[in-house]
Image (cartoon, helix red, strand yellow):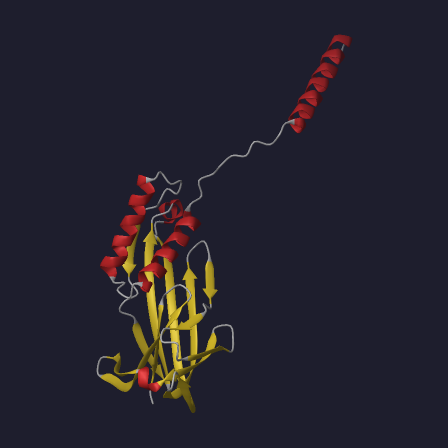
Length: 237
């Protein structure tokens, strides 16, 4: 290589080093990417809980709430661009199962959303909210006096949880519980486990239809969780 070639190579290297130095001195410029699947899934979880709190959360009511979410998003120009959503299953009515003396009430909400990922896989993504309350009497009874009135209390072990399932997160919550009448005794004994003293005079007799052709006599009593969702306690006594 001649002298001129060597000088040209040295000049090119110097220019390259100068460009690298300039790039390293530049402030980073963040780029906003529109990833909205997890945000929409979280919104749908909130919708399902709010709908259940109304105590009338059937397919029509839940579908109406989804449409309201779209409308609010368009009206106020919210940054969340919603994927097409369909309500597949509403929480009411729920299902009842019986195992030994334990009675379990399950309320399941299912949405499907057409995300970019589902466009590639050919399958819609599902968002599910599963609320489960399993009740079983412990055999303990006692008396309690509230404002001069005596109540016969039946102790029930209650396992209560929320499960949120989606392609973006899987979460199990153990919400706090409260009594609507101010009489029930509520004590947390585990992450999702409670001992509930149910006032028998305030519980309603119920025909518990576990499945077609199979029913049992029992009692129905309601608590409420921290999201306003009614918690149905079913037990035989």
